[in-house]
Amino acid sequence: MTDIKRRLAEHAAEIVDGARRASYGTPEDNFAKIANFWTAYFANTGRDVIVTAGDVSPMMRLMKEARLCETPDHYDSHLDLVGYTLTGAEVNGVKE
Image (cartoon, helix red, strand yellow):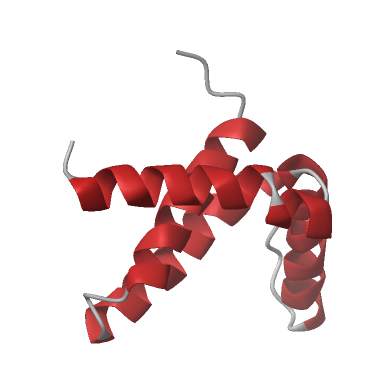
C-alpha cells in the first residue's frame, strides 16, 4: 500500500472512531437522524421518499464524488469518502 493510501485509511479510521463519534454519537444513531430529516424534507416537498440510515453513506459519498469532479486532488474529500465507506459498512452490518 502506498503512503497516501495508508495515511488516508488510518486517518479516516481515527476520525470516525474518535472525533466524529465523540461529537455525533454512533453512525447508526446519527445516520438514522439524518435519514429522518431527509425523509421529512421529501415529504414536505410533496415527494414520497423514505430514506434509511443505510442510504446516508452512499448518498454522502456521491456528494463527495461530485466535489472531487471540481477538485480531484482535495485530500479532505478523499478522506471523507473513506470515512463514509467505513461508517456505511458499520451501519449496514458488513461482515468479513
